[in-house]
Image (cartoon, rainbow, N blue to C red):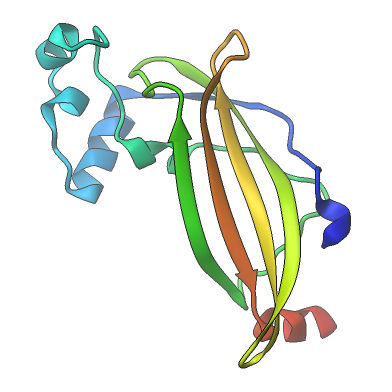
Length: 148
């Protein structure tokens, strides 16, 4: 996995669609008017509606060539979001993923690998809107899948 550090996907255009924001807000149980009510959005400091902070999770970030993680043996370890500004309803965001680190640690059930993935979103001018960082733990079960 160390050879994957620095590899990234190509940028994918995503749109912060009003209907998708509504469905997401309903799914996470956060029906704040800043996400849903157009009048509230217009009167806000953003001048329009914004998306919930974790909405970026639904974006397409493309494929990192050569990064083939199976469905078995993976554990979601951590997720951190950092925003430069909120996602605005109706805007296009250009997203890509990148492997930023990989390391191993000994655990009670054997060695575990930790792959750090960054998901990035930029506006049409290439300015950063957000970065999310997730740590995926590759358990001993993952290693067994790799050996098969």
